[in-house]
Amino acid sequence: MNSALRLVIPVLVTCVVAAAGLSVTYSVTEPMIAEQDRLAEERSLQAVLPDARFTCLESTRIQDDVDAAAGSVDVLDTFYGMKDGVHAGWALKVSSRGYGGPMVIVIGLDTSGSVTGVTILSHNETPGLGTKVITETGFLEQFSGLGSGFDDGDVRSLDAVSGSTKSSNGVRNAVAGAGRVFAEVLGELDVSGLEGGSQ
Amino acid sequence: MSEWVRVFRQGLSIENPLTVLMIGLCATLAVSTQFQNALFMGLAVIFVMMMSNVLVSAFRNFIPSQVRIPIFIVVIASFVTIVDLVMKAYVPSVYSVLGIWIPLIVVNCAILGRAEAFAYQNKVGLSIADGLGMGMGYMMVIVLLAFIRELLGTGKIVWFESTLLSLPAGYAPPSLLLLFPGAFLVFAFMIVGARWINERFEARKEGPACRV
Image (cartoon, rainbow over the protein chains, first blue to last red):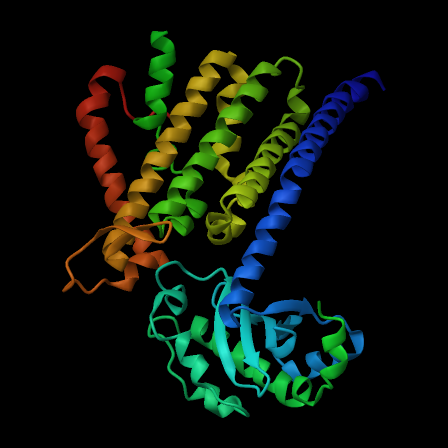
């Protein structure tokens, strides 16, 4: 009994001290981490639909329809953007599989369903290869050419970045998913009800 | 004091964790695609290695040898989590790229290895020298490895979105260097280089190079 205690007590003390130290660190850094995440999200929302004010669409009924329409990609959040009190468009935060795991991509759509911009919020792609989808000029920009009513075929006909096919496909699948979500859910939605609660 | 300097120098040269002891390689080869990331990875390893060495060494007489490994792991994991949270809060752009490799420092055998092989048997002062030397030896190698891979693999060195250094425009970078085979190729040449340097400058003064 005594010898067992001699082994248990040091482990116990170590764990208690470690837990205390970590909880202090966590409470100090937690608000900053939340703030960093919020800033990153805000920056990418502004990039896809400039000068709009965004509100997260929180409706479980819509979320089910959105998930069904999105198919192979996950729609994490749906935002609607207001500009000067008028509904200006949508921003979808979509998680799509790249080469190194999920990539979180923000896609902006105007009220007619045309793509207004695409940005990558977070990813785990190979630096210098998969990350070319972010750095290569023209790749993310080409999605803004997708007009109202675009479908999967239109997205697939756009260029991929050579050397980062899987990362390119991750982005293209996300955009195609956003297109389907707009065609099947958001485009049909009665937005007048939303506008009241936006400010 | 000369003992302190000797232990410190060993970590950089004849007992370098990467080029000589070859421990903790998996994270090194994976992360060394960008100079900037390698630098932060190196700093994280130095911090964790120093702190865990100090604690393990300071409490070595209170840690029963039967349960030493779980205690080392808890100590190392705590410091790694601190680094993880601090990086997430202050340098999110680096954190988003290093991602999983920061938590994986916990199982980096270089750190557990030093706690077990050195700090558990030596005084605090010497353990600091060992942690600092080993950590800086690690950082030196990973930063150089990343520098070569990024410069030759992408044609430029990027530091927080601004280009520090770039090769002439006609250079067509081989992407092989950024992939894992490239890591092994460049690293193999670095081992050769480290051997040459150690044999030339260290072996005569310190005795046989291989003492593991």
